[in-house]
Length: 121
Image (cartoon, rainbow, N blue to C red):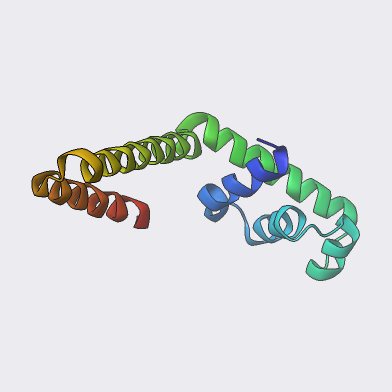
C-alpha cells in the first residue's frame, strides 16, 4: 500500500486522536492533494508549521497503529468477508445448477444478511 493511501486510511481510524490543525493539515495534504503552501494559506500557519504538523500527525497515527493494529485487523476482516462472499456465490451457483435446495437457498440468504450487517458496522 502506498504511503498516501496508508496515511489516508490511518486518518479514518485515528484522526480523532490528532489536534484539529494536525487533522486538517493531513486531510488537505493526503486527501485533497494540496501543497504545503496552499495548506499554510488555508489554515493560517507557515509552510514549515504545516510540514511539522503533518510529520507529528503521521508519527502519532503510525505509533497508534503499531500498538493497536486496528487498520490491519480491519483489512484482515474485510479480506475474510470478501472470501466468504465469494464462496457463498460459488455455493449458490452450484446449488442453482445441481441441487436446487430450498434449505441451501435459505441458508445463503441468512449468511448474506449477516454479512450485510457486518459491512454496515
